[in-house]
Length: 347
Image (cartoon, rainbow, N blue to C red; front, side):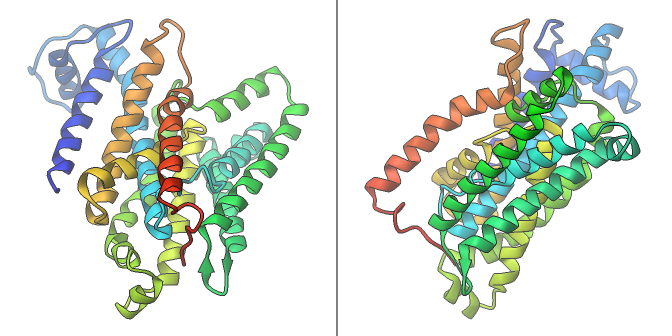
């Protein structure tokens, strides 16, 4: 069902317009278009107030752009991992990528202005989170792979162990932190798009795109892997190369996403599975569909987080967990009834 992509694209445009226009300063869609046109040098599109332009361009637009980028990155990472392991329960958060990235980002933050943060600013944070996510996923992947065969069940168990170790290390950081550092820690654990600036987006966007764009070229190899590793090799697929590519993409996208927005769970789990249920298992549809739906979900979650309890603001990670948690439990119960969870493995 290729029609799912245009539908998701239209939904993304709609939710972005609603998010840009909703808040303490309401901005009608016509004025949103006028402000955006004015910013790219098109005059006479429509009238708007200066305070509306400031609110839109400096407060809401960065949040929407970050929500689109991070949501797309998490969706693609989840779709690629689920395709690689042929299991809908695969998720970057479950295999330790998010916790490893958050731990590294927290370490860079606590390093202070005298070291990496002072030298490179947001770029150091993004690179540190990427390195942490990559280290975590490499450890989990190595543990779960024996003689070229990767067990999904072992990978999930290894992910639990890595998450526990990362949590313990984070606890050590927290034990020696002051009040400001504790507030920074809460940001990483709960996730959020508030306070984002254009410079931080500029620092992280290249890494996000570096992970998302190459993933679309893995659609055909991932389709072949649905038949099994042996069959994919017979079709000429470099299975080991695909594994390395998916692991690297997951580390790049999730690590950078955590650096910019903290830990936001379940987007990578829910979005590819929903697209797969609607459009089938073809990764030529699942990968871009998961990117679009991930962006829609995260922008909508951010909108809910800042309006449901206004003037207070809920962490975005709480909103996505409220949606993704029950969905994950439903997946577990469904797969257990089908007898697929116990025997799930992949190579």
